[in-house]
Length: 276
Image (tube, rainbow, N blue to C red):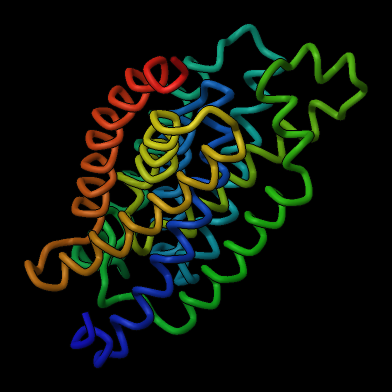
């Protein structure tokens, strides 16, 4: 591990990975609780359109990805809320539209090479710049700030929207806040995990935490620990085997889930024996 830190690009990548590992499961806990586990997938494909738009216009792809992702997240929430379309269909529309727009703009963009595009799709440890680290740090702070400031209200909303309305909570604002925060998280993670796999880091660590904990807060904390472990483990492994980090990060996260699944069953079986 120490030899990795000799390289500046690995130092930047590890800082980015830790921030992503914290932020993605934090907002992912609310998304999973609200049964919108595929929201990150849909936004990730819309962000592809944003990246392609950046290539086409000569703008920083991260900036265009933020704008397009936020607009897409707001659109899906409005369609889900106001239209006759269910949440799953609205996600599918976002998914297909993002793919179609991304493919179209990429084919028109002269400035985006295949290697650069692959780094956005599957992550890259060598392409994380100092500017990327600062952008990731600012966006991660915003995501974690939302979780800290609005955590209680978001929990009530995710548990039962009708109860949230009856309690006088601003349901529309909170719903849009979750969607926008998820969009920012996708942009945060795309340089490390990649757009095609970012949703896994928002969902799998949360599922892992649910196997071992009972409370919402403890699930979130454990999910954040699992997220950091998966990102650092996957990133470190990708350095040695020379493959994009996204796949290894997700495999580490899935491995943690399998271990937690077995351990959780053992713990649940042992609890009655402990109480006798």
